[in-house]
Image (cartoon, rainbow, N blue to C red; front, side):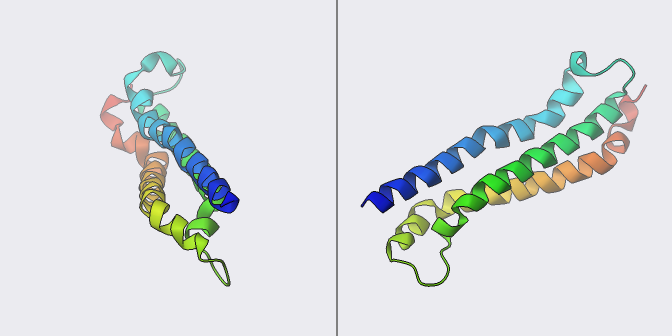
Length: 125
């Protein structure tokens, strides 16, 4: 039973600490566009928006690294005890939702990072 409690605590900690990071990664591009006080004087809005994409990607990579530590609990390989199946039943949906939301953010962040200035060209000064 100690194994289950320790496993649950590890999984919950990883999943619940990634939620604020996902939220931050989601709002970073909006902050870059709508809060001009944070933008350096010599920067354009499009360029600043483009730079925000790199922050989004970096945060998503961090989330993936954090969640890789619990991947083995949720998707066990090889010969493991039946207790691991409990983790999969309890947390698989949350884990996959965070993973796919992170993948989506990584793709969007990469597009912003590469083409953000073109996307916001009408705002460039």
